[in-house]
Structure formats: C-alpha cells, structure tokens
Image 1 (cartoon, rainbow, N blue to C red):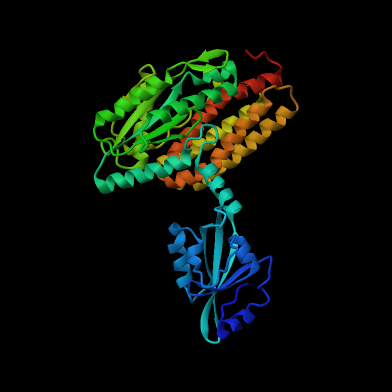
Image 2: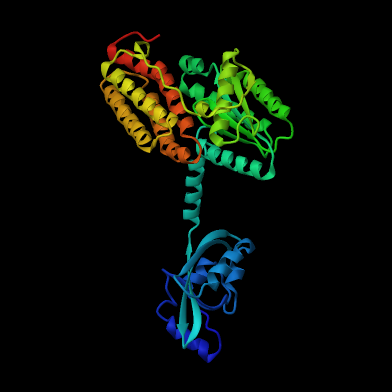
Length: 432
C-alpha cells in the first residue's frame, strides 16, 4: 500500500487498514477517479510495481472502456455499480477486470471503494457459450438462431431505408444417398466443404447460416437489382455441383435454391420465409440443381401443411411405429393451431417433450440389440434435441411455421433412414 503524504490521507489509510495487505481482495480507495490507496492484491492484479498514488483508475484500463468506468464512478448514490473492462499490465499482458464501485464517506468526505477481480477466464467462457449458442458446430456457420436475428435486422433496416434485400433458401440434392452409401462421417465432411464454398463466394455484408440438416439460408442485403439475387443463386448452385474429394473417392451433390425478395414477394418475416421456401420446392419440382423465383406469399402459405402418415412409413417395430404416429399427430395439432391463429405454445412444448420421450424409447431398444449404428443414431437424437432447445426461442423471434416444417422434414428423413436400419436390427431383417 502506498499512502499519500498528507495527514488527512493518512486517516483514510487507517480506515482501510484491515484490507491493505489482503491477498484475497483487490481494493482501492479513490477520490473520484484518483486513487488514494491500493492494497497489495490490487497492485499485483494490475501488474504494477510502481507507486499508484495519485494515478487515475481510468489510466489502468484500455481507452475504449474508459467511458464505462467513468459512468460507474459517477454513480455516487444508489446500489453499487460494476463494469467489466480490459486492462493492461506493465508487462503488456491484457486481461479482463471486473470493477465494483461502492460509494462511502470518511470525515463527511465522499470516497469510492473499488474492488477489482480478474474475470478473463469467465469472459472467455461466456464468449464461447455465445459462440456455441449462435454457431453451427459442424460447419462453423451461423445457426438458425443467428439467422433469425439477421433476418429480423435485415427487414428492419430495409424498411427504414426503403431498400430491397433477398432471402435465398438452399437445399442439397442427392445428399441422403451419400449418407446412406458412405456413412454420416462422409456426409458431415460434405456439409463442411459445401459450407466453406458458399461462404467464400459471398460478400462480407452477406449472411449465411445452416438452418437444417442439409439446408442453408443466405441473406443478400442492400440489393441493387433484382437480377443480382439470381446471379448469386446460380453461382451457389454451380459451386455445389463441383465434385468433392473425400480421400480415396469423390462424391457429387447438387443444390436447389429458392429466392424471395423483400418487399416484392412479401413484407413480413413469416411471409418472406414462406415465399423462399415455396420457391425452393418449385426448383426441386422443375428437376433440381437450379434456382427459382418466389411468387407473392399469401397468409395461408405461412401455415405448415398437415403431415400425411400411412403404413408406408412404418418400420415394422410396433412400439416405434405407434410413437411415430403419435408424434405426427402432435405435429399436425401444432400446424392446425398455427393455421387457425390459435395459441400454440402448449402444443410446441408437448412436441418437444414427446420427442425426447420417443428418443429415450429408441435408445432403450438399441441397448438390447446388435444394432451397429447405435452411436451415430444417438448422435442424431442429441443434435435434434440441441436444436429444439433453441427452436423455441426462434419461434418467438421468427416463425414457428419454419420450426414445424423443419421437424416434419427431419422426422420423415430420420424414419426413412436411421429408424429403418434400427428396425432391421431389432427384427433380424437384412439391411440393404
């Protein structure tokens, strides 16, 4: 601790005597921003070997954060204030410090007690959690939650500036056959290569996200000409069809793209999603490996269609088939609520709850079988449940209709692929 030379400041030192040599709590006393006393832990935290007397606390943090610190210092009434700032030690090492400011008085003079804590590890952990919350762990692209936010922001900006922007929905053609023939590891590598290609061809101002198994979304803000969107879409289709080397063999996929332009095709988030989605399936209907324009979306277009279920979807294991049928019924109840403008929160919660119950049933059956795909199958379950934890937030922000369509598509693909393999192992049937 370094006391200031005047007698009044020596009295202040006596006030802080119990904490002066503390190794646990970093404490300073300040008159406004000017440090009067610092204890040993405070000096060590900031890596300062010289006298900190009469030094401004603002000089200990990076310039970009000084306004935050100054604002917290100015609050001399009310509850304690705190802020996090980046500081720089004498050795040049940067670290994140949380500063807590507690107003106090001594001899009727206002003082500020400043408690400091190194929170670098916590800040990095929070950054990692934020990254995980908004990024797709497989491709590194933004995920559905980040796409939802970017789409909202793009629409708000376009409305204020009276501008256009384009939404592209891209779905890979022929991807399922790669998974079936070469396995899910090969499929994951294909998705990573495709994601890298798409990202490399876009502008820095554009946004791309992976929003489904093999489905991507692209936002093209500040669209200068309608034709620019088709130019980009054609380029993405061409990139997707280029061969992909996976070690000793090559694979090829294609891409179908649906294009919707704000405000030409729709002027709300739900309607724009519906328009782009409709255009995507029009591209597939025309033969795939191409892009198609949207048409104006009606309100009815935003509500997901009922999922038709029949014996053709059954896999031959009664317990699994019965649960599949009930899950379809729950999805259709949710779709009906959306179509009729009824409250849907309870229906969505029940879909999520029952999905977890169904997955637990399948994994119980796996444990008593010789099913060799159990690990990959469980991983599919885990990925979807992770998606579902974020989907409810997306529903509030963007479109529950998009969630329902995603779940419908995922269920059909999962039943036709992994669940049929599981059923074959459970019943002893040959798997082709």
